[in-house]
Length: 193
Image (cartoon, rainbow, N blue to C red; front, side, top):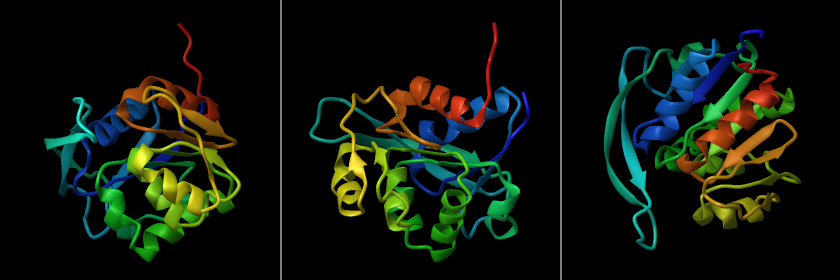
């Protein structure tokens, strides 16, 4: 297996599992993963939030862990990475307002590199105008943004993922097994037992 260099985009109040789990799982199998947040440096922490599905009309939110970034946003360049992962939660609401974030995301699509986004992370993709003509999923509340941006929203169970070319999306963290497995396939990573 060839090691890939993967960029993980996250931020304050990103969903805890949607930041921690892909970061740790991708490292566990041997990939190099750099976690970044605009306006923060390597060694700084972001606050995360735990979103849960407890039968209410939407998810509940509780404090998560402090997640330590291991790279500095201002020091990275998309050309140095093989793939991109975008965490969900509330961080995408404000990260999509950052023109440097949008330009970075566009790079991965223009260069046809693998991209994995989960939950509200898809809001960054819609703001970057990169979902036009693609099939993808997201947290259901993001569906109107996908449609308005020219994408085809796929309503799937919360534990399922959708793959369209090199784009891998999922509605929320319960999809991690399918989402990350699909992303590994797109990356060309195989695990043998």
